[in-house]
Image (cartoon, rainbow, N blue to C red; front, side):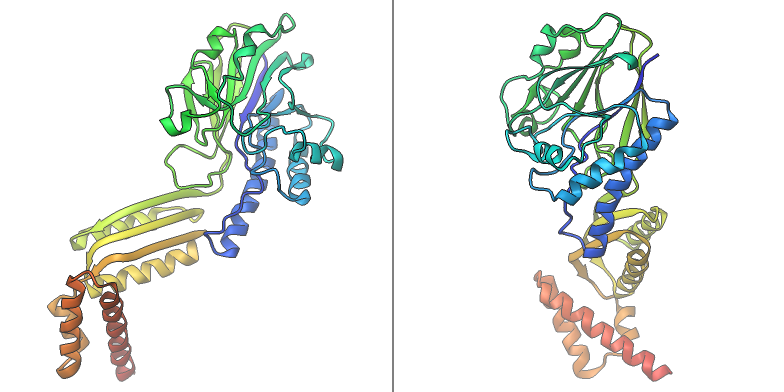
Length: 372
């Protein structure tokens, strides 16, 4: 019974410039480690082949070192790999793929589907019908020729393509590299392995997006998986198993703090996240000085525990309570300054908010030093 691993959208060579250098480097390394994990999974599940449905590389201009490291990472699985060019690494006349071949970096068991056609893996019982992108954007369905491809009797007909199933994704995604939603049925495919959508998504019982092996953006799209596909015989319905492969979880939260319990719930959720988290947090609403202390302390702990946490508090208004002001012992002129800053903050002055936070911090430091 043939069994293969379906993956896509590795986009190796991707950079993470929005992150600190240390965090960005760790995210890059996780993508290489993810390929090694795919090889390990292929062995553990006794797969006959690994199919990569496009965008192995993020750009044509990735370094030679990146090219060599990608193919080195595949060596843990000695069975056949079939790699398809996608829109980021299209099979141009001169491309990242031709460079990889010149470097001698491509192992003998890795099949580069640089031309449309069939890669016959007869000993594995698979015929891979390939629709590589030979330019970044196309406006015709490159999988249409699948209907005319002849494959050896007894081999499963497996389509491998990179693009947008029409009518499934948003209009801006659907604009280029279209794929007919009934391609598997029309072209008598036992399975259609797709790339381009970075999350795991089922189109129908024979058509799936595997998604990227390691999440790389803040989208709730079930990224960080591979698919183990098993098909008993030609014409049989595939058995598809989603297997987690990602190291890091990406979370993007937009939170409004109104009452004290909102902050308590937010901190509870942060504490519950695993250490291998990448968090983008944007806060608005209002918070007391005491709440600000709790928030900053929790963020400090999270910075040390998570892979990365970024918190935008520019729209979070400081609203000191009477107890907050009393705790600062801000009498006389200082008390008048605090009152003025509170009024300015009500006019949406970010400078007033920051000044109030700084002043509160200085007053608290003075109190702590006085108590020593």
